[in-house]
Image (cartoon, rainbow, N blue to C red; front, top):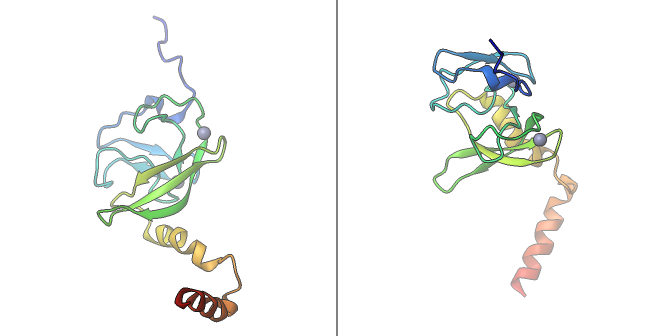
Length: 139
Ligand SMILES: [Zn+2]
Ligand SMILES: [Zn+2]
């Protein structure tokens, strides 16, 4: 019998996406169960929040890249729900994914706070900057 499973380009190919299955995260090496995500489709690791570049359109598993998608940002949707922005380390593609119920909250917050921790201007000058802006607004 011929092995039909020729396509082994990425790790999730042979994964059964039913509830009791788990996979090992390519990025952090932790075992991730599909249970606990709060939805049927877990698309990133709840520990390091990384994903794999497998989809061209969300869920289609058709991308050939297979690179690790790093969580680089958090944004808030209209309904107030948080979503992650992932960027592929290999090809640079960006994608947005809903957070899961069991995502690491410390990691989520640290991503959300990163731009505030590393502002593009010196924080000790923020008062001067605010004054400059308020003056120009009032004129
Ligand atoms: Zn991970
Ligand atoms: Zn990619």
